[in-house]
Image 1: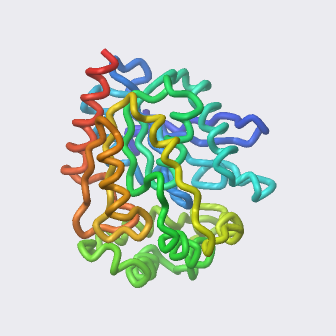
Image 2: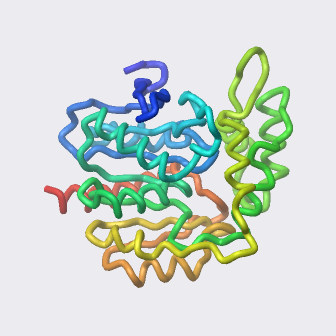
Length: 295
């Protein structure tokens, strides 16, 4: 464990040999269920840092946070077509096998929640509980349109402070409760320092996957994948100002799933931050339920 960061960096090979990076918090042989954190489309494992530290200490628990291919410290794909949820699901399965995680509680933000539902359909026994952060079986095209408007297109800031200003101008309506500190954290998790300047902490070619989507046509509904989580406790979180997960979808998730709790994060959009004391407490309660059922 790196005492400066609170986590270890692990590297594994995907099926095609590409190098994948995983942050590991807490002891490897912890007695409680491991937690696996899966970020959003152009996000990284860093988004879960505060949550992972708290959960690792509380258990003690082993917490893994994944950088998908083309994000964070994982290698970029040779072909941008590999930024595909089926490839990323296979990458996730390779990481679970390499780390010896047979089952656990999955925390999925946005794309990470889609991956969690896909894993539940492919390998139900792997999931003991799920936190779906601002994502569900029905995706609002407005949110995808907005994300498509900035992924791979952000101006290059000269400093993280300038990056914070860029993000604030872009997303102030989504996150009116954010102060300077939160925007600075977001900036440091959007860009990274490389060769003396700041660059996005993801492959800008991710944009191409969004450009291929026909947002005029209705998006496929994923209720059968959500139903694959019926055997485990679920916490579904929505940002009050989210344009990706509609209020009525969140309500329907709560009605359809026998043990799905729902929570709306006030003053936040897509996707809510999970590092506050209240969020950590809510997620901790869901994990406790999953551990009790698994026990």
